[in-house]
Image: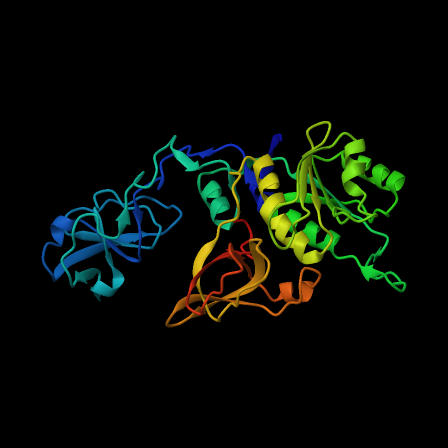
Length: 387
């Protein structure tokens, strides 16, 4: 993928492609860290020093004053330290006495100030790449003086749901049809993972029509299909893809939900992910597979989503399916026990309503083994925007 410069005001959520370097020391001057008085520490070795106030230093400029022996300058947080001063005494530790100030505490050199270049030096790294640019990262870039940053091009993700049984939300639904939700889900997740979704519309269960729509989708570097990946007579996607030059590298994963998921490469190297049609399967497989593809194409580390070891809030009985399971769950913090997880009520991979209550996927590597409340379980947060 390529890269381009972008104003920092437009760069939120993008991936930084080139590091941001400091053009000058930071802080760029000796700086007061609180409101008070700039003083010479030699004048304030003991409590009760009485110093003549010769002026004030405000943040943002003005004539730079010089602190001479037995004098002080009133100073605001962020202001440049006057010459001659080597400390700041906070206002709470002083009292006024006409045109003098009484310093109630001893003051050591370096108190309440930051020296020029104490954080970073000119030429040092301000922000490394690659990294997703959030508010904190953009603040660092702006503080370094950058008005533009170089970001990776957004990954274009074609989304192609399939099936005659599907109808778009808002359209009349005939008997036997269901409202299509996978396009909406994948559009949102593509954006969350850092890509740009290109919905292709619903493809029918008809090989020529499916191939035409899939061929159009291959104009994008990432193609995601949803539905038509199992073994039924109308599961047409795998063969239609092969006829268009897509090579499947795997088809079927030992997991639940989402066993029929497939991954392949198109004739020009396109990344093609064939997802099963059930909405929870689509969601889980997108987190496990699509996320890594989009991140990798932007230069970010290609790794599975992070998981957290937490405690179970309830017993989990043994299941009958041997496959590792990714089950919708909810994380919450117990004031005594810390982070706890419990499953949400859901009826299976075709039930998005239970998924909507979840904020994690509970990972059960051996579902046939029961787990008691309090046992450790790995959970994958699914509402953390970028991790």
